[in-house]
Structures are given as C-alpha cells and as structure tokens.
Image (cartoon, rainbow, N blue to C red; front, side, top):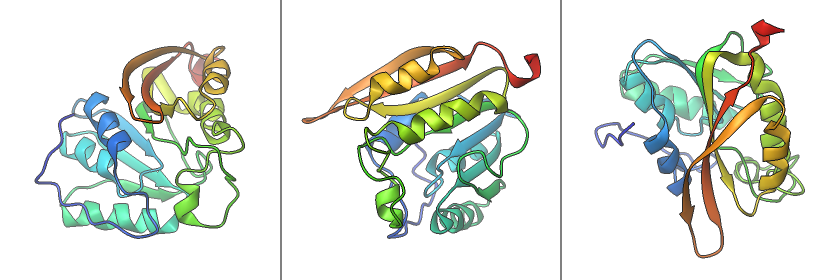
Length: 198
C-alpha cells in the first residue's frame, strides 16, 4: 500500500507512534478489496486505516486500551469502518483472515511491564518472546493461502522467531533496512497448512 497523506492520524502519549518500521510495513503489505485483514498491535491504526481505505474488511486489535481508543477514534475521524478489539494477541479474535499484519515488540525487555509505552517495544528477555507466541497462534486464524507480515529486528532474537516459524510456515524476507545500530527486516510468512486442515 502507498502512504496516503489525506489519512488523518491522531497520536496518544501511551500509544506507539508510527515510525520507520510502521511505514516499511505499510509499503510492503498488499490487500485487495473485500480481503479480510487483521492488524495485530494496531497502535494508532495506521495500517488498518490504509487497508480499510483500500477496501479491505479490517479488524484491528491491541492489548493497550489507549491504542484501541486511538485506533477507533482515527477510524471515525477518517470515516472508515472497521472492528476494533481489545485483545492480548488472539485472545479475543474470532474467524480467519487473508492477511495478518504484526509489528511486534521486538527489542529485549520485560514484556510483563505495566507501562504501555514500554510494552510497545519490550519483546521479552531476548526480544522474541511476543513474536514467537504470536506465530504459535496465528496459523489458527489464517485462511487458506493467507499471509502474515511481520517486522523483525536484528537485535530481537531473530533466529528464535525463524526457528519457531519453521514447522508451520514458509518464510520470505521481503526487505531489510539498515539503521546505524540494527537492521529492520520485513518478513512474509505463509502457513504450510491452515487450522481447517487439521
């Protein structure tokens, strides 16, 4: 999808602000009208808003209640319809999706912290805890031929995530952006089978 400057995004101090990783994801995700898209960890809803404007049927989810309200408010501000759900990963998610998008907390840090600002980047002891838990559940919610897009970091237990994906997904690195201290890597995962195959 292309960035649309006409989409008005209001931010919140307790919600992850869209950055280079968010816009890298936006650039790589492809959706068609009528496709079902789930944005996990929606934050301000930047991906969800663009997908809804492109005609996708969107569900946005976040564990942070401030993010849920922020996404909901931004959807209303832009006249875009979507379902917005408070959920710890897939806890409150029903159904299957053609595309699932997740820009997870991918740096080493205590993921059980009570600070919403810290939860946005703290992916566990090695930075991979949240991402691997996500991949362990995501395949149950992928429609046949569905795709999962994720942003990962060279500093965030990348090998752990790819190892966790190995049995259930084929993984393809789509793009790598080098920063002065890390690389951000955009991956597309395709489930080898869906939950309906089991």
